Length: 609
Ligand SMILES: Nc1ncnc2c1ncn2[C@@H]1O[C@H](COP(=O)(O)OP(=O)(O)O)[C@@H](O)[C@H]1O
Ligand SMILES: [Mg+2]
Image (tube, rainbow, N blue to C red; front, side, top):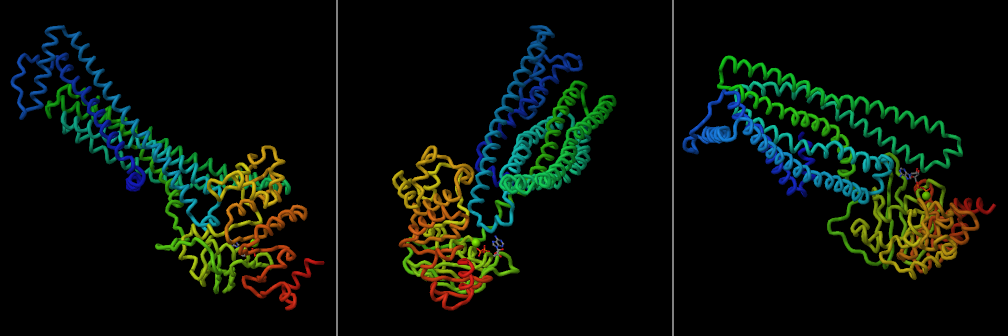
């Protein structure tokens, strides 16, 4: 329950006002509920003849307020009976009871209404927070967590929190108030009987708590499994082409079958256990009632404790009214335990540490004037293996530096360090003499344009995909960028021109078209620094020409870092760095490198034969 309190503190604080209102309405509801029962007691007394008719209420004294109230009520009833007769009095009293009950349920509704606002608001807040956090978290975080599992945390886990914790808010706010108010009334009617009933409570609590404990663990298992299932589904969807090509349908569906079966088993155990809450509390409640009946009967029969028969009936009615909130409370407890597991999974994202931090007094970086310098940069994705080993390169403004080398030699890693997708392990990268970790991250990334082997596009219009990095881009600007990127013609030929929706990740376009869109996007952003990571290697020769031409235009008058697959495209680079197993083993212009007759020469010859 402690975790629940912290949870409420974390998420419900903005809804303080509503919370107070809800508690207030619940309190009123409980008071009117009690009133509707309590006022029946003297009537029953008079009807049964165990209470005398009262013809003189006496003076009202504050010091004996309850006796005075009782006398006045009895006097008023006596008057009624004398005037209208017994049956009519019963009707009048019944009418009043209906009225108080209407007030009770009315306030209950008002209280629930406040809670609904809180509940949906909190769920929206949680979703927003996760999304913001996902956007803020650095890229390394996501290489460890599977995408589908992330989606599960955002969807099913939030739903679980909503279904279990938030739906329990109602009961958590209402039941304790009802119980306290009813219990006070019961204590007032007969304290020995109430104490007797209260002794039973710890026994009940113990039994209920036992089952609740294992619920959280089981629920955690279930949510984790759900994460696996979604991760699996996501992989299947994105890998459908390969699955079909390799006839792997049955293999992959076996894996899926196994996962959903495991999920079914966990859910069965979980739900069966949870469904124990209701029957168990109902059974225990009835047991307690029987015991209370027995003990109350003893009190009345032996005439101890001053308990009258009609008060006892009222008492039992009250006790019966407690059973429901108590049942709800135990149900809510079970639900909360279950939901807490989902909350823990969500917290893994919300509380994740952002390893790429901006310096407290980060500097602005509005333009790039001089040079980028990598100095003794060492980096590894894991502690065990360094992917870059003490690499130093200077990239002067306006120059084109090309990186070549075997796949896996660390070229992409090298360029990913510049926009701080990752931070160096040792050494430093500086822009205009200042370590990039001292700049504002936003400013740093604003300077850099990116075109990768696998262009990342969104399921949106062509226009919006090109205008992605620029706010308020005009049609003219977007078209101009598309022209430079050799994309304008094919865009005009597509169904709705610039308003054509391109499908998931641009699936309705060819590889070359996708690439030209991503180039147009970079052209429009117009950054002083371009990073091209094997931008043409996934293309056929035909579209490669168009794309290469677009790239050449893009690189004009810019500082560029180019990773090239085909060496012919970077012959004219100002400097070529040859990567081998995380180190730069040769560097120089095309002619200088050929003259060295080393790795570069070998690579070059291989591609020319
Ligand atoms: N996200 C990652 N997590 C762990 N290792 C990685 C990751 N990305 C790349 N690597 C490893 O780093 C090395 C260099 O990769 P990369 O920079 O992509 O090479 P290149 O671009 O030259 O082909 C490879 O051995 C690769 O396995
Ligand atoms: Mg690469």
